[in-house]
Length: 222
Ligand SMILES: O=C(CO)[C@H](O)[C@H](O)COP(=O)(O)O
Ligand SMILES: [Co+2]
Image (tube, helix red, strand yellow):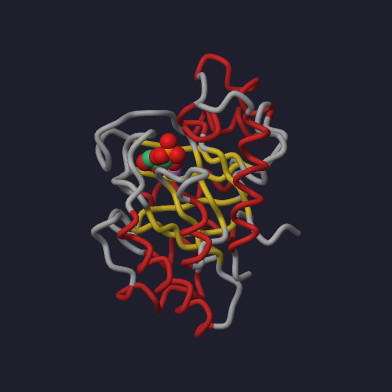
């Protein structure tokens, strides 16, 4: 397995042609799907019926990022629909342990995400319950925003906590990740990289994926 995973976000894809847009990123590791409910974030994208359809046609596994209220109720359904990884926001969940266990019981990898202003330290004890922690590098809600370099210490903090824990928990970054920002993410300890506009805005999505993978691999500690 590659030491890093590249997960292009279809938030920047053509929503009228999602099957074709998934085909364009077939050389990536995962396809990142941003589910937004217009309550947890001020934007609305897509939900479970569309994710079920995407799972059927995607050439690569689906990585679901749930920016929704009440993930306790909804997250397990995305795992049952066949998503490889399901991430809920720690700010929105009532029972993180039960939700992560329900996601895993349904056959997916479980993850929690932290917004830029949310500290990681209070949630370190959750590491045995999850397969990945997502450190947001923009305020969730929209693609194409500027990368927040001030989140890199938090990425390092999560990586250090994972080392102390000793299990295999991946560290994902999402928001403003591009060829000019991915190296500092890998240096800080990230190993799963979401990139929306940097991939779908490129002339060649596959060339952008390869460039991101090469830059991250050269800087990863995994
Ligand atoms: O979760 C997200 C926004 O809330 C998106 O995954 C993220 O913004 C990707 O888009 P870009 O790479 O253009 O920033
Ligand atoms: Co996302």
